[in-house]
Image (cartoon, rainbow, N blue to C red; front, top):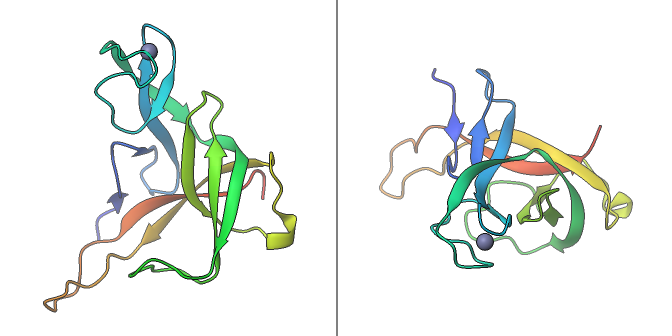
Length: 144
Ligand SMILES: [Zn+2]
């Protein structure tokens, strides 16, 4: 068995062999300093093309959240689940599931950290066993 890969190598870089740790990545504008999560070809703040790859880390604070009771088709996890909008220290916001947290314990501004999980790919519609597991990023309360 090979180690699962990042579900999106443009947004999540896995940093250990076991695939349990990773960091969010994106770009930083050399002109104005604004950071972008994920792929970008120009700065959304000043339109400069002078972007450099940036490591955006693995922590943030909960900016907003919603409790999802009607999941999108093919959602592989439990329902309801918490979808959190998390602000990174460099400014970009990242939308992902929040795990390991009672709904009553959710609080705007709470510190959260990245949780890397392997998720099985859905079986192909024509039969077959589906693809290899992918590593996805979620949030959990920091220090949980
Ligand atoms: Zn810029």
